[in-house]
Image (tube, rainbow, N blue to C red):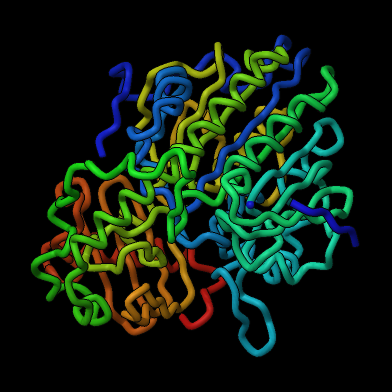
Length: 475
């Protein structure tokens, strides 16, 4: 490394159906105000929601000691729109980050260029807390951050260690640091990025003054594809059981939009290879989380730390014939994300909460815990006793995705709405999808043209229309 100058079934404990919170859920108690809590947010990249059961530390230290939100979603299931929401508490309609990159008529619509151009860096959770917290980011920030000036650190961040390329990477990458230095990492085992980032996270915790509360976003690249494991984890996922729920290589897609009907079946070997890579690359994340929790405990912070584990979005394993590893579509496998929250003594342990949650809720929860009420946010605190009474708006710009075999499909822009009972999507082409997900969780029967669901379709369309303002590019 040289330096130059200039990011399945879950085994849960407990059977409670709703989140049980202490009195601090509805306000900041005197005891809490006297001791400002630390906050650690772990954001994985493209993690399928069914994989928490593969991670022993996450199961033991977070699932069993915290609350798992079983209906958590990324409304715009793409890395940068979701990360924009995870930093600001605002939907894509507000951040104007619709994609991972690109522009229309010279105006950026995705990635870091859009995030910065529309003023989002001045209204992140880091800017909310920087006056009283040491704010730290370790890992992936935004795609195309390589377009920022060398040495640039966004507003609000006190400590900064992030990928400088177009995206993250497991090997052969550069990291930019708070002091403006750049470290270059190669292909040795010691350069494996999840481990390097874990070292930086642990060091950042240790170097924070004891009386200074910390906010840290730990954002490894794993398990983003192509998923590369650390050498010590190679081969561990070779014996995973097959993944074959009914929506994988869905047999009848005649009620799906044309761009889905045009897709062929996904290779089961590719699905198996993808799942093995995800399993193996996540093991180093699990190791890193264990080190972070152990360090928090050793320095005396753990008992006063809110820990959030979440992914930016899901990823396809062949559901509805979507190519392996793709997202960008408004189906459960791509929108649903793992979300676990631990806060000892203040959030019930071993509980599953079925209420609707969204990525915009994470920074709003952080603000609430820190005693701040930011204006103009779309999220709701996860600590509230009452959940969403409505639903979650869904939006996305047009996308053209291409998988490793050159298969491509154009998905039009869409607006939609998600509730506990229904998923509705209206595309720019006029096509619609409506699923009664309570009875059809695999989204196998499109009810948009069913007269028996005409009233539901009309109601959901109205909700989507009201929430989808401004419209995504191409709608």
